[in-house]
Image 1 (tube, one colour):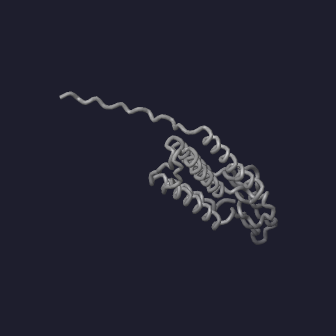
Image 2: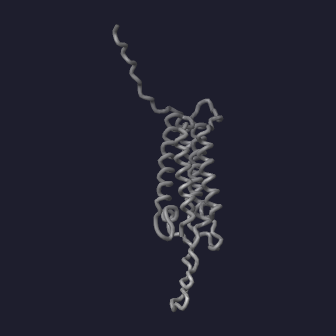
Image 3: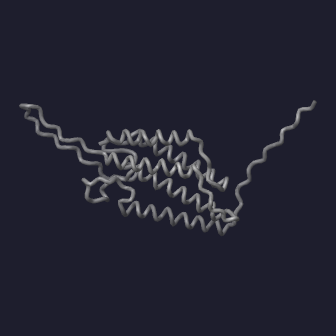
Length: 211
């Protein structure tokens, strides 16, 4: 009995959509990103809530708030992309993946807010009969650059922050690619959410020990 020849799997063609609709989406997305960027730079929207620093421009940017803004922009942009390029105008496209990504980001931001900003070590009193002066407490972390703020504290870059940034960028890139090629919200495996939860939990836990 002859072996059946397998049917070749054709490559998925790139999405074809109306040029005007696509460029309208690009314009709206640029405006959306611009609004978040301007508010992040000129307000305390993306900065740590540190009451010891009255001037919010001196407060460091918050990694947890930045991650929440990142996923908010991506999911809103994805929703608008599907709406603009879909000829049927379907808008009921949100799925569990989008909700879980936003939920993890919101939970991370809330947990980071509960733990508070990285605290400065208290002043160390001198030993009895010591002539050494009292060491003043270390100052709270101040704003340097956006990258310095989200990746480190007064001691430099931290690995628990770096891994969270890298995983966020990787999953965000995959999310956008799958949406562009499939014209729908992608479905992530539960292992992805577990990994994101571990990543965010590690950041929140070690953030308590930052200075």
